[in-house]
Length: 194
Image 1 (tube, rainbow, N blue to C red):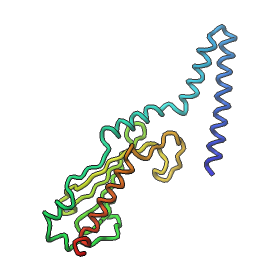
Image 2 (image 1 turned 120 degrees about the vertical axis):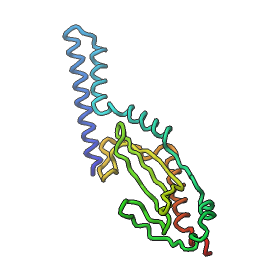
Image 3 (image 1 turned 180 degrees about the vertical axis):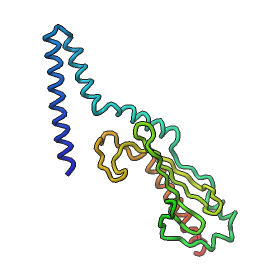
């Protein structure tokens, strides 16, 4: 439903842009000014009205991705089992319902915390997920990713679709690595019993 509306708005903007550029060229011609300067100036202004933040958004997203995104394991589940051998047999997987603070309870000792940071510069969002030992608050694994745009955040449609980017390069792979790690942590007690 939103597609025809966006297409109609884009076509209308294109027609207005053509009219503005032609008007700028006509003004330059009638007043002895450079038609190339006025024409390309009008093109640049009409381009920058909707797209002024496209390049800065892409550059900012790439900077955050290169500097801060990734997947890290601080302690493997085998190391945790070696430190807590008596606890492993008592762990029972839960349904994964979120707790009061938004973390997903995996079992009696592990939570999967998900944090979304308010938009950073140029509507870049920071997503962080951690698998945490709920008794000691020790982080076993962490995944950080960045997205851009406004679509699918709070249910809004992606109005400026050219700014949409769901992950950093490799972000989806790192997210599945954290999902695999949290699934292993969730079912750690069941694996020991088998």
